[in-house]
Length: 309
Image (cartoon, rainbow, N blue to C red; front, side, top):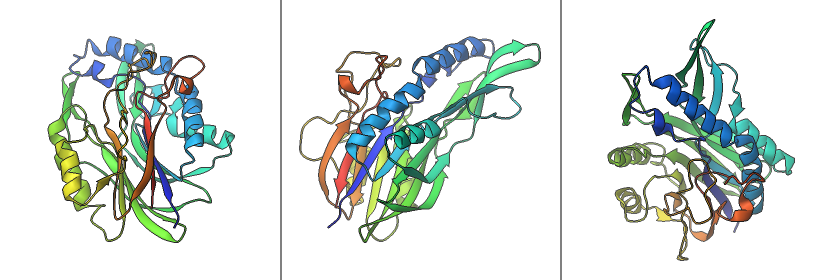
């Protein structure tokens, strides 16, 4: 019987986005400048190499990725070509290691423009766009998109006096490997307001997960064992893929990714399955040797890989 190795990883947008929440219009340029400086300092081009090294060791068939960001600078009229493209950089880093992953499905949120500086030609700003993405390894796992969605229930924040929703979502892919099939759903539930996590999970259970046959749910759930989200998944027939081994913490590195080892404290990234059994599980990107040559952790989260049969 052929196992399927599934990896989930929150790639980390590169800075603490909450630094701009509640800013007035006058405060925004300075806060955005600090945000942008941190994004550059956490250097995704270097982190993509570290991530690719970890993924190569994991030998995963399919990747469920969150916070797959695109960053750019320009006027507010339209988002220009990305200056920092997480997905392109990671796929290239994987290809350099002989690992060819194809985009099976992608669910992008709407691009957001933030004012940075007033220049001769008018206001210039920073553009950002988030996405959740599924990548399938060529020759190991066939995958077809199975829908994508943004949550109807969302948390809202104030930016320069206006109210903006934090737009999170899910993406699905139908997988086929070794004569077997399963649906994989990748998601990122709300962090800043835990009360909306259950409604968001409910949208998944009533939507892409409401199919016959095996279903895998992977992602950053922003809640841990014993929390309502985990209880609801258990009630719906999903089993946590982490085996009985201790540990498994995946979240807690510092904003600048330069904290010493031991920063991971919470297990909030997980792979659940219904109709499949987990054979083993491990955490990735949590060891000092996993850091970049410049001392950055690959992400503020660790990755998780589970073999399912």
